[in-house]
Image 1 (cartoon, rainbow, N blue to C red):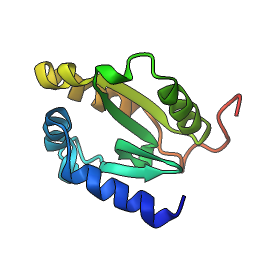
Image 2 (cartoon, helix red, strand yellow; image 1 turned 120 degrees about the vertical axis):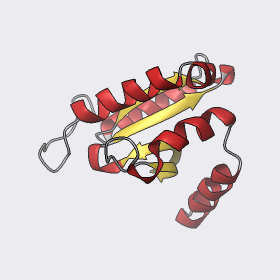
Image 3 (tube, helix red, strand yellow; image 1 turned 45 degrees about the horizontal axis):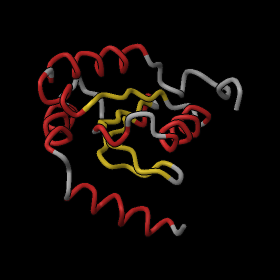
Image 4 (cartoon, helix red, strand yellow; image 1 turned 90 degrees about the vertical axis):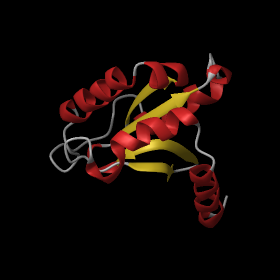
Length: 126
């Protein structure tokens, strides 16, 4: 797949964000979360992730019920893991009804994930 088409897909997804994505993006955008820079609908390899903090290789995914036991999510997570990313997944209803708790979990993960500039080496099993 051409890089341009993945970028176009990401742009289209940014225009069609779900209510849960809009809610969480409000707290992640413009470095609102203690200065961590997040990107929304960001291409990584063959995938477009909901949110990514590239400096700390942290990916946030918000999922609806269509993602329950989805084998594509397992492949996606394995790819991201092998490329050094940590993936946090939250259900859409959780993001909408427990926004503060979701943001707290994201903050804890961002604080606990060292910058890759300080850590070298590939993840085990990749």
